[in-house]
Image (cartoon, rainbow, N blue to C red):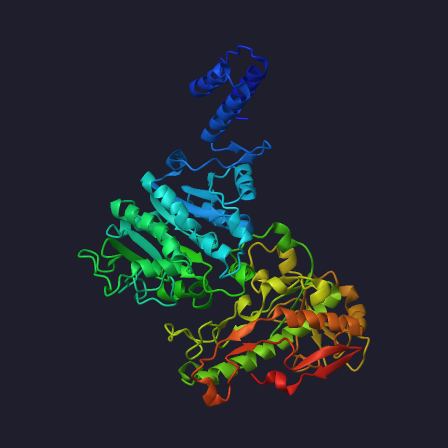
Length: 626
């Protein structure tokens, strides 16, 4: 234990004993402040109360506050906490709660990795306060126990209040005089944003972009060209330069909560910042900085290439195409709630999973058979042609994954998602040429993120209701630096093959020129009861990679489950895990007789499904009427 901490502990214990026994203790090794605290305990007429108060004060000054049960807690908010953490008079702040604790840990990991050492966390509930204090993190309490009771799903009042929690915090701390970097915890920082203050001295506020394109030419990492308060900016990531104007703005923003009763913090910021009839004037010395809020504030917008969303980072790869280095990615433009955000970070290799996630267990994956992209596909203009091509191809891929998932479930292995290919985006307000309206130059196809196809929160929930739980790994799993070589290098390719005219034999072949480990030919159209005994000698391989080349497609590869009950439970899970494609444009649907099908529920069983007893049933043709 460090000497200062030891002396502090001795001072506290001595003072408590003095309080209880009335003894005159002289603390020769205490610091002056600790000695003064001890003297105040001895002098107090209300010994127990005074001792507790003084003890709490001393520990709070050390950055830790005891709870009523003696456990550590974050101290109350104070300017001193910010003074201790500030660098270049700047503090990064993030609001943390129990509901998103795993995101808080992920945020903390990447902030520290980026060398950002001037952050402070606001704990909005008691468990988070205890966790942060136990970790020794710089923190303070901003308790709001009511938020979770009001519901945290998108659109619920608790969720709305949670989005405003950063604004409440801003109102509380802006008068301390520090520049602030405000960050949501569903973000990953790659670089220290401090240089942005120096690079853009004319800007009072720098917001991240909430769009899916950038007008900046390649190589240009400056502020967004032509930005104004009427641009889509995001309040999950922004920088505030502390001055009289921003202090006034921060307090007005907090007051706007009651004037904007149905909006979250971002939509209300739009309403507040966009003064009617004023587009925003460019700054005289910085044309990419614009006036806002009745011309009281100068604001700039960080382009979506350096302050990225999940869309511009993963789907568009905008930083790469713009040849710039990003500062941060924020998990906006994702689907299916918190599990969707988590899965997108896993897809990007940015989620902090424990080592055993990568090293333990055995796995199954599939080699997808993909169609050729038409040579002129990116010149197609008819939205419905692109959508129909995408829905046909994505359902064919999902059907192949269905077969691989069946093998994984039957063998008790986790399933590694293949790299799905999307020929169309997923956009809640409808696609234009299968893209967002402002990203028409983006080439297709793209790699599908999980949340375009699946409900990641539905993989293993409520087995009695939704069937056999499914353990999954992301498509990037075998390419991760965290996955050990003993997993990556232990691959067996299993290929159902029409070459074999037996039902209980296998044929081994050495690894091909493309790697993938040795090749094992097995008879096609076997049930799990027939296939698994043939694979028993090969369980030493950590990864089974299923190939359909030997039978021309997934339909003839296997016959699923011998037991009808197992097939029924598996199919219930398959019906539960997929999400929807979204969306056709409402004005176009009648032209193609697609009324009522602007949003299309995806299916793992669009072509066939396992019935049990070795029977495979063709899917109802109506299923494919998308």
